[in-house]
Length: 311
Image 1: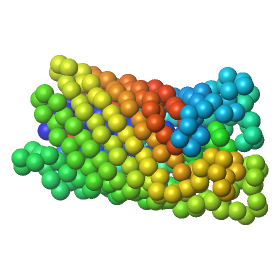
Image 2: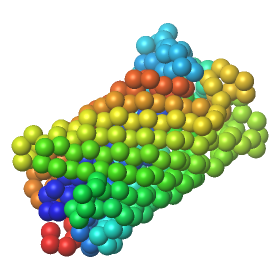
Image 3: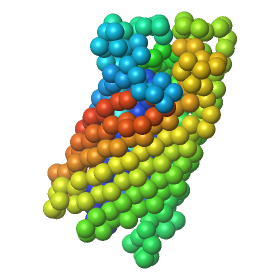
């Protein structure tokens, strides 16, 4: 696989679409494609998410945002690196800085109009055990990663995350031809409990709240439009396996990390290989269905740089 094609494939999968009640970012998608040994890429992405409505359980509503017309928004700057140790094993690490805003509409959840902090980091190893270049089958890989909680306040509608450490694992499949390509991922994510912010509404001193486990699915279809540009279409789903509902039994604003959050995101992207070393991309998405999540619109742009080997 040439350097330009590999950089394109890592950019296709690495540009992340996001969702959440507090417009919280989800973990990045895994990739079935691995670079030549001793090569890798650096990836930077800026993502804006905003919402004037959210799903109270499964019903879309403006809730406390309605009387003010305010938008819940979050800007996130992602940084990631991936590196291939062998032609079958690769390492990737991702982290981000996030800042939220809810102007004049903190409402019943309390807190401030804006929060910021280092978002959760993700460190993972991918093992590709089927390679489409040497078989008739699609590439297939197993990804196992650790989630390291960032530094931010939880328990507010505009908190930037849930605050829990954890693990995730997924099975990833993909194939890329001259006319089109696809990737699919199905995985499981488990996170620890997190200490409730004592300043949040409804909090009790020393209280812990369990962050629900998730099942997730990521699907992508990629169509080259010439030698430089590729168009992508995405569907992403996160389904919590437990949790509490907004307004349901056991709920208080301080317990936002324990919500049962489901989201379905439809989106697309445009990727351009500027050189063999540099790829740029723009992407968008919309939460089209959910449970206890923001009905967020998602916009972003990214830049990828290849390094190592014959670059």
